[in-house]
Image 1: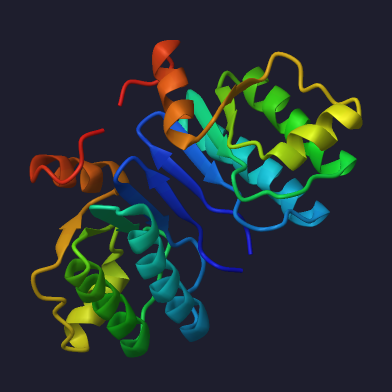
Image 2 (image 1 turned 180 degrees about the vertical axis):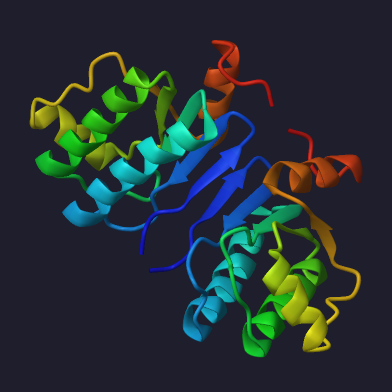
Length: 120
Length: 120
């Protein structure tokens, strides 16, 4: 099953609530980019609250997904990064530079409002 | 895979983007009721945009889910009901009485705002 992407005005919401295997992560990357193109979304909130663990491949897919989305003109916020995920990312030396993060979905949307990307 | 439920303040968002089989529909019913209890959500938007077809069992599960959620104190709006789904519901004689509906996710949230259920 593919991960659902919700459209809310000019914002896309993605909530990852399953363990991401490599195939699902790549499908999400593809789906998200298509959806940004299709809906002309200007902001994306990618909620990782339910993601308990991460490996270097998934981290790279997520990092690439953010860079690709921003190339297309959408601002991305990662939300709900769990302690274990944060530890793994830093220990793997993956810094996700210049990526906006927030504590949860609401704060992520709030951040996009603050930088005038979305107006809900 | 279970259908993700997103929390946005006192609102839960559910977007069904797969064909609902009987097991998935029952799991969603259970998950949604638990999530309402857990988060004290006051509004639920159930987006059916990607649901192309429906049968009498799924229609009953969805109808029951709405009644159960409202019993628990959450107001539910169904959004994005496709023409084929609307036709099937009426032809099956399933009227989903007293259920709030709206054209899409945004309008569904708008409706809950109007009746003062959510304040985003």
